[in-house]
Amino acid sequence: MEDVISGESCRNLGRALCIITGASKGYGRTLAFQLSCLLKPGSVLLLVARTADQLNEVKEDIVTLYGGQNKLDVRCVQADLEKTEGMEKTLQAAKETLSSEMEHLLLINNAASLGDVSRFAQTFTDPEEVNRYLSLNVSGALSLTAGVLQAFPRRLGLRRTVVNISSLCALKPFPSWVLYCTGKAARDMMFRVLAEEEPDVRVLSYAPGPLDTDMQLQARRFSGDLTLRRAFCSMCSEGQLLSCRESGAKLMKLLLDDDFPSGAHLDFYEL
Ligand SMILES: NC(=O)c1ccc[n+]([C@@H]2O[C@H](COP(=O)([O-])OP(=O)(O)OC[C@H]3O[C@@H](n4cnc5c(N)ncnc54)[C@H](OP(=O)(O)O)[C@@H]3O)[C@@H](O)[C@H]2O)c1
Image 1 (tube, helix red, strand yellow):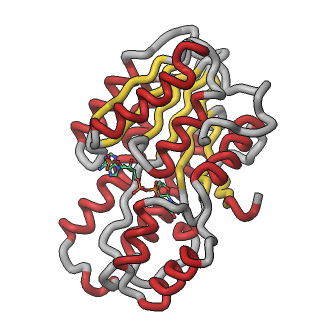
Image 2 (cartoon, rainbow, N blue to C red):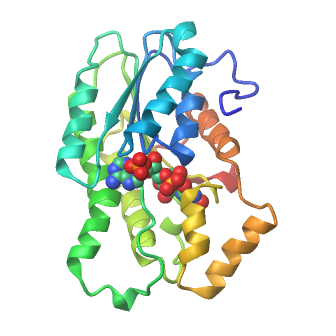
């Protein structure tokens, strides 16, 4: 069960607008469940991704579990965050929830893509291909965060938290993963700058560890670097992948404790 976070039953994240990008499957889906039971009545959960059917399924499951009990308003936004229109649609949906009673704005920048990991850096001669990758994974995350922070400016009684779902790849080069590593490194720095500029905003880059999701499957199937591909395959066969639930529980604890240094990169394995 993704919904139960042991030992955290009496703490909560307040009456919140919580936006989760990439909530249709994988880690984002689990985070949506885990956050749902930590939000106070009157909260809004905005689930964003491209696949409407999967988003609606997540919404229905959450509403069945928590909707009545804590009056959680769950809304789906079908949007492609690689595109400006997708970003604007998400922002518009967030603005529609504006309320002076909201105590917490929580944005989880989780959506990401692995990019083409079958090729090595020197094959990326087409700037359009690189730009498309960066559009979702870097520009989109910055623009959405900026738009949301502008729409919900600093005010007394409003806590603002921005999470960047990061990776070890933000810090360590992985051969044949040039797009992904570049994107994650750039995102970490973006959010570090944000933390310097906006001391009232709580900013966290959280590296969730290797998760058993579709993205891992892609890594095992397509990584061009054979040593890396074998390492991913043996992690899987030896049961070393983390469940989204286990990793998400540590993130929930970080958010509840709220004592991380703003802008920090924190890794599942270091907590
Ligand atoms: N899996 C791992 O081992 C691992 C390790 C470290 C960090 N991470 C990070 O954890 C986060 C979640 O990864 P995951 O493993 O859950 O990946 P995943 O299973 O591939 O899920 C990715 C999510 O992002 C959404 N998404 C992809 N492209 C999008 C777009 N253009 N517009 C809007 N939404 C889009 C997908 O939904 P739609 O397809 O419906 O749009 C999906 O909900 C990512 O930031 C990833 O980099 C993962």
